[in-house]
Image (cartoon, rainbow, N blue to C red; front, side, top):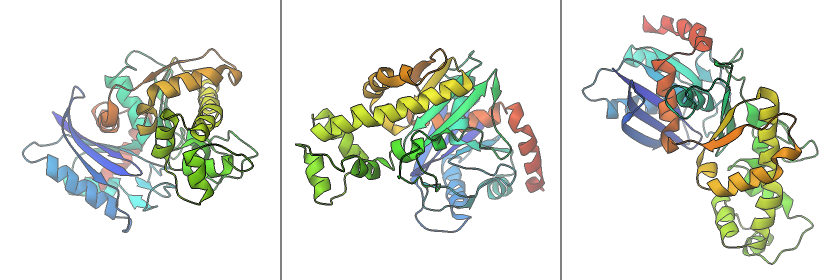
Length: 327
């Protein structure tokens, strides 16, 4: 039996053919469209699936998508970090392929993939957190995948970590973990951080001239010893991530937290040491073990496939509601 796993990110869409053991047979990656209507994203996914499924009959399609979600409707109603803010997923894909489709948040899919196939096997209290363009989480408590009324029980990136911050999140709120610590927002945040400060720093000089400084450039400057980059990451950014992770531990009391997303995976030791430095100052419970996913960029594909290979009980009512599209 073969399945399709789809990972709808803010920057890329990844689609893979996955066997029932969680092994990725083939994959394709395409960029998120910058323009289009509510059907554009689904059309790109359909083309990508056709590209990798040439002779095999597929048994189901699992989708992990950026959110927030409306699981009942099978759509993304407002994606803060994606070029197209509102788009359909379930209906057009089911109508095209006539197979079961299961939809979940991308981090929800990832935690389920880790629980079924990865380093979370046998662990009943588990959280997956993606630190990338945005920040999201998938949460399993006592073996039960948390979903919520619309599919957004895990939007931990919108936890408030600084009530005094004037940095606005893409969702419209202020002081959110995602607003202050995500890859998409770091270039804005560092401009606020340097106000009233002076550094001997290449990054500082660029900001002073009004030049754009990317998140990747800031991390590279950190490794090069740049004074501003080191102060910003060591003494601000790692505090933000430690506060966010402590909030997750305080709320869900997990045994294990698995980190994924390009920002975390490309800077593993920096994140491990930085979080350990500040974590206990925010904790009220015994700390969870922190690991990094072994699936790399495939975590979303494997997680999406896991949703349909072993459908979580908490998603079954939504999946049953999608049957109307099979007719």
